[in-house]
Image 1 (cartoon, rainbow, N blue to C red):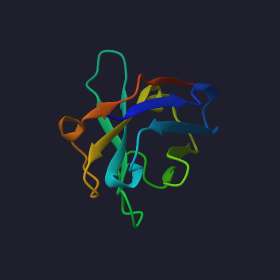
Image 2: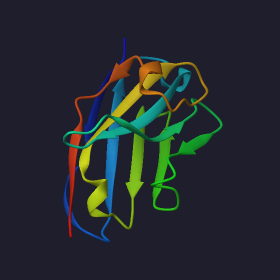
Image 3: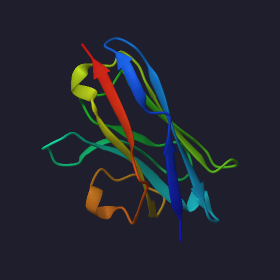
Length: 124
């Protein structure tokens, strides 16, 4: 069982930055691939970024490449998403997710564990 808790959301102006964090409870954090997803009002949940359990293999949605950076610290059981050059269209609730297995996946249906989400609002 893995419990995930996100933090770091908030209100920021377009062009600004935010750093989201996700803290995982449970053992063997490195055995889990991790993902960030987001959901805007009236839209489906969409993939943002994913990272492998070890070796730092990453995948990003085209819409965030070059602006967002995902990282993890397996010793601290933490996951981060550094978001730069934020745009109003990045406004959404952001979720971290975990799946047993070391390779990243972009499909929300592959993930077993989800956090409660943190709101990110980017004003124009």
